[in-house]
Image (cartoon, rainbow, N blue to C red):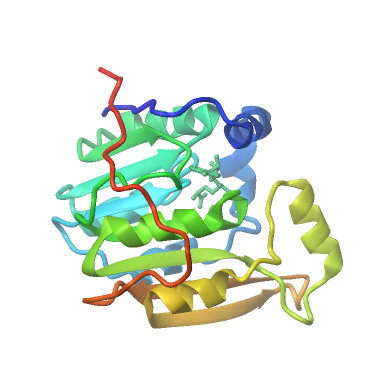
Length: 235
Ligand SMILES: C[S@@+](CC[C@H](N)C(=O)[O-])C[C@H]1O[C@@H](n2cnc3c(N)ncnc32)[C@H](O)[C@@H]1O
């Protein structure tokens, strides 16, 4: 396992690191209670042995076991996060399980591509809504994929009937729900699955999107990522 450090310390990285310094200790014990749909996301991505999968904002690696089961110890799983305390938990999980095909990268994602179009699957599981420059992050994710590669996004959303109370509580926890994520995903990727759910009678809502990178596609809008490998200063 290698860890990449390729960024200067930004405000966003500082915020994520400070927020998860405490939360990382009880993250796995508490988040199952409201981060619904994570197993479903992995199922809907139809990950096959030998594929390269990138999880952006992988946190403690809560999705790794499900992804690893699909990869059957082959291919590669790259977990990216910009919060050192979360990555530390992810590294412990990787070590504990003896996974040899998992690489962790300490990176604030959204400025450059890591694999330059050589990835089969990219997923954002409850991370896109925390990424300050989410449009660039999606453009980078688009650039990671081969034509025909899959993207999966699972996240909170605000529906007409969902409560303001929960959206306000999410905002206090650095989660922004009122951006046009779903519209952007539909513009960039050919939709395969799109589902919206209400949890607890509309106390909050979340969506699951799976899309394909079209065979030939020009990025809509003005954002475009740099095609550069992140610098590896580890090992
Ligand atoms: C709510 S957690 C989700 C963790 C995991 N994906 C899961 O489903 O449990 C969001 C994670 O995204 C990370 N994150 C936020 N912005 C990021 C960025 N720009 N680049 C990389 N990671 C980011 C945070 O540090 C945090 O670990």
